[in-house]
Length: 185
Image (cartoon, rainbow, N blue to C red; front, side, top):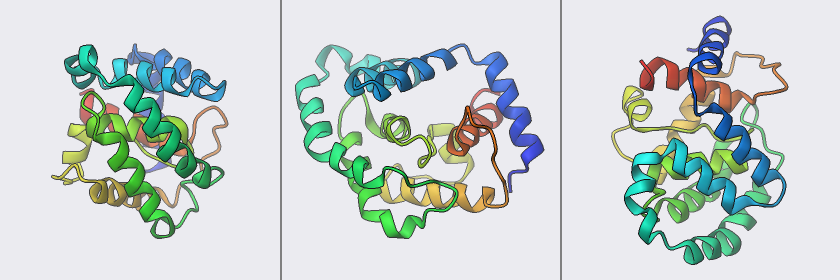
């Protein structure tokens, strides 16, 4: 279980120590103003840097744009307005899995990047993960089903929290908590 006091403490530590935090806001602003692909690329290049840089010279940008437009955007639209705090993840399992599978197939995005893009587009619904976070919660596979299960687990361990911060969604706060606890340390 995550308690509110520790969650707030880790979020404050994140704000003070994580230098790439401003790129998150920049990427969110781009997505919100219609520059979705650019926001995804900025977040991938900063928060999924190792994976993205390995593939950046060969990244299939046009194919990525097409998949986002034709497959992901309709799925994201269907999920708009859903909130992590009260969604029944079982009702949206197929959408989560399709999104994750379509995004993670790109070299440079893969599994960490897929979770970040999904969060960036629906920040009130998806919690991001990275390798250390995934492993600390004993998710050994990077499959779409495991990412789906990870979100359900994050919802379960935070269901008692009444999140009131208007500047940060609960999924973002949980990510900061996990990052400071498992990745940053």
